[in-house]
Length: 286
Image (cartoon, rainbow, N blue to C red; front, top):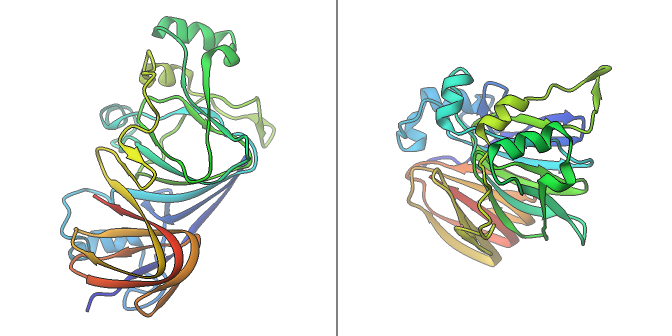
């Protein structure tokens, strides 16, 4: 019988808070198997040497990165490139499509998604003149919201917000503005020209809940479904692999205890499994 894959996370302390990479096989951080047959082996090594665990998916690197973002202060105003731009200008990196699940936020919580510029020239002028209140689009959020951040979308997570981010395996971020914060006495690098290059202009004033509802969100690269476990839930792994993230509560999967904050992989052809306890989980599939 195939083993479930549990990992030790990679923790990154940052100027605005903390990121906990729970599933990752990136050059900037790769988690290692916590127990079982592959204990101590990195996810990157598993992907390269045991592709049978992942249904022989044809992809150069493990395609998904899962992280918990704990924002104690505002994140920078930022944007990510798509695959084509990243491949050309970032040494073959993947672009970055993100899907967010709001774990916690203030009662009046907001985030930055999008902007109000009519064209790229107006956007560049607003940025040059630091007209951020006029330029940026701030929207309300609440606990349990799903949001999709496509490449080219100007965005920023605000302080006192906790997000589970499921994304392409990329660490490319272009910063437009960072509140003139210092790291080791130096202002953090900005990427104004690249940001203007890749931003979507004008920003489509579409419903932010596109391709999602309270239980489901999808993008070009993966689908996420939320399930509630109330005492017992039987499921089956019939995809190339599944990533399960526990976003609330605790319980068990087969004989393994699981709790809030954990993410793990159910490998190819694992078959049926049983979840018990009281918890909310997100299931990510390609």
